[in-house]
Length: 309
Image: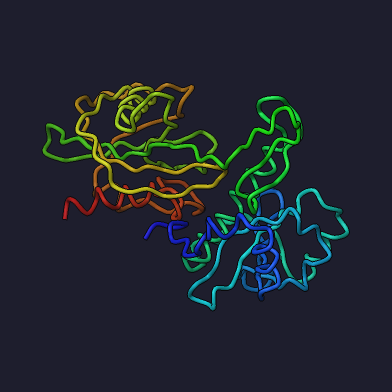
């Protein structure tokens, strides 16, 4: 299963609307997930996620807590998230005695998928709150409501509600059978990536656009390759900061690459045999490398490779 795609908590969408119910859940052996500047809270010893009890956080402002859900596999334990980005440094320092704030993507492959998915949810919601402090209609301050799953404008003449949004992005493995009888897939790279890393092409969906049309447009914009027969394969939450990746496979009807340097740094065709010699993201040294293991890109590449077995 794709990383971050196994969030098992019951989000209790109806119950969480009740302030009384929420207050009861906080007192009901709740566990607390901390974030800070888009990083999650881990043990300094083994990088295991640290879930705190109410006693450890009750000195903080719990009115800005975000309810994540109930763990029905563990006595319906309630989980809440708190973002410490804007609190006093001295309060943050107390949590750095035994723990540390780290990028979830650096440790995710060592975590079980439900835990990684829960941490990704906390990170995504805390980012959304921090980036929606003001009303998009009138500019007044927003306040947290609905257990952290909405924000309400404080201007009584406006009272506009804002809800968390996820930006859809398509990501696609493009294949083509060449005249030499070898099928190859199209991969590209961004200039800021580690040396040698190539990944599947991707891009955001435009307003008024179907997912399939977005695949065709993005491949053409980035590589100059025309594609047909667009087929959906899988999706992955990607709250880095706020996307859902929609994975496709498509057939190329052209093969001459014309890279738009404003979009990507390079694009190339690779055979299955060539991919077998690739290193991994983060490896030292030169040579081609596959994308990071927690991303759907690796899944799409592996899916295409398996079709040749």
